[in-house]
Amino acid sequence: MKRNLILGLTAAGTLCITLAGHAGGHDGAGRPFASLSGFEGQEEMLGAAVADAIREVSAEPTADHDFTGREKILGHAVATAIRTMNVREPYQHEMNDALVKMTLTHIQFAKDNGLLDEMIAEEIRIQRPMLERVGKMIEKTGRQELAIIAMTDRTACFYQLVEEADREPGKITYKSPFGNVLAVTRKLDQHDLTEQEIHEIWTVPRIKGQAAVMGVDVEVSEWREDGVITVSLPENVRAAMANAGT
Image (cartoon, rainbow, N blue to C red):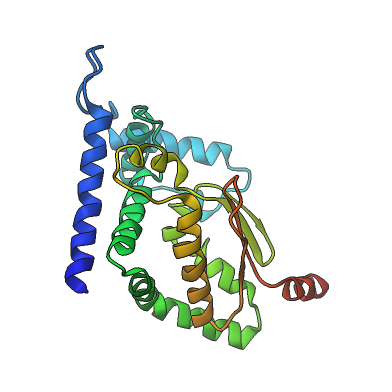
């Protein structure tokens, strides 16, 4: 099994390179094979300018909006965003692009090799220390909404994959992040997955498995054609939260 998982990760890395080849070639207009941000060597200056803008725009400045001493790191992040967003062929890239590709190939490999159950179990095993810690917090405080937060806003594995989400107490709604890339990779025969299939064989069992470790029951909406997914506590739990003013 470990050998199969290693092969899967290797395949995921290969896909990123393959798609880069499709996206970065000359188009007859003299474009370079790979486009840089134009800020190479100036990342610290770029980061300082962005840090100033963040402080100016922030309605309620907090420590999270202060990048003093982290200007270069911020500059590298912004430069990466510029490079990513300027890749428009064969499709408009989004900031979650690399994570989407590797997640898709991770799921595709498991599907092709009959390892879906093992893959999800392994993901949850790796996450178990964090999930169990949150489970103890829920048991102590009774705040079941911590389970939703732990699976979403608490982890970059979610918020770097899902760029936008609507949040309510004990509930989060977002759009499946895979359609943009799948529209291309399915044509190239790199993936045969559909968004609905991913929802049913990966999203739902993974989320329910995570919640079970925390000792909480969660509901995941059935697949919708617009790709919108809702993860929530049961309605009676959310009603009790509302009555309690939490």
